[in-house]
Amino acid sequence: MDRPASACAPRWESPATLAEAAEILRDAAGSARAIAGGTDLAVRIRRAEERPDVLVDLGRIENSDGVELRPEAGAIGRMEIGALATHATLAEHPLVREHANVLAEACRTVGAPQVRSRGTIGGNLANASPAADGVVALLALDAAVWVQSASSCAGDAGAVPIVDFLTGPGESVLRDDELIGGIVFDRPSPAARSVYVKAGQRNALAIAIASVAAIFEPDAGIVRIALGSVAPTPVRAGDAEALFESDWRGGADPETLFDAVAAAAAAASSPIDDVRATARYRRILTEALTRSALDRICLRKA
Ligand SMILES: Cc1cc2nc3c(=O)[nH]c(=O)nc-3n(C[C@H](O)[C@H](O)[C@H](O)COP(=O)(O)OP(=O)(O)OC[C@H]3O[C@@H](n4cnc5c(N)ncnc54)[C@H](O)[C@@H]3O)c2cc1C
Image (cartoon, rainbow, N blue to C red; front, top):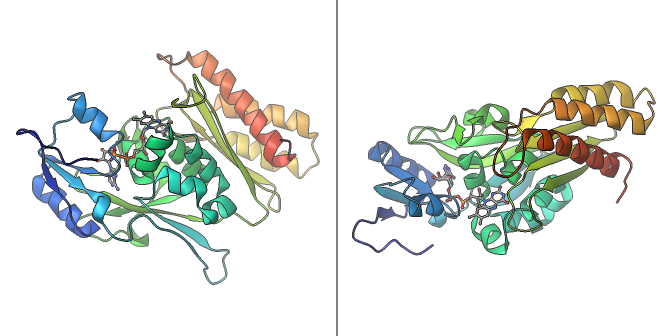
């Protein structure tokens, strides 16, 4: 993004570290905003919905966009993703595709190539839209968010589970002087299969009307199901997951079980009517998308 040039443009700061960025935010006492890819924030500034005095550009912070798989003693390893990783990077990254394909698939559905090459996963999270594609996948992966402030480092001590991080549409637990440093989650088992399915008003440049991220762990006989665009935040379909776990191993007929699990997922939604769809349509879509996801990951249908 170009440096703002007009006389009343915000002051532009380019810190070299996350800690420095957090200090600038703290000192500005609410009048500064972090900017990563700018795909959400630049739109809000242009519409005069936000008028920050200072923009803190995170784009020059080193080692903030990496993807790593860390083997852990006695565990199967965990993925660590820097907040500045773009959707384009995550959609194609070999580690993400191999170990967390649901996230790669979700990032592939974001906007258009220009948006994917600028927009970051940290911005997707901080923006806290109920429709944020990357966030729905991260919720299914049981990810946690590393939070950095001027007084504490981003790391495991300050990791907040995504389920606690998001508090409402456009709202999270992040304070004005805090930043997202990265995201961490345990790698699903090697046998796991996952999928992200999204319905929008068209195939490209479409915000989700409803979306489903699902992960099937055949060894454990469990599924994890997260729903997007059908509640104030992305939500997990806990009752649907429990129903699957109790009946899958008992040898239930898959078609009957998947119907019941999909209906339970739709029941976990609390959608609203808006310009993109009615609440009723969103519930129907959630059931159909969940049914399709289960077919694809549990029965390996195309
Ligand atoms: C045309 C268009 C289409 C889009 N389509 C989709 C879509 O299909 N799916 C989807 O999910 N999103 C979509 N978006 C929204 C947007 O692209 C994503 O939410 C993107 O991930 C935002 O990331 P960013 O780096 O651009 O954030 P920015 O715009 O830089 O920042 C967004 C907000 O997050 C804060 N922020 C950014 N990084 C951090 C950080 N590390 N720590 C703390 N706060 C931070 C900023 O202060 C700001 O409040 C679309 C946007 C546009 C313009």
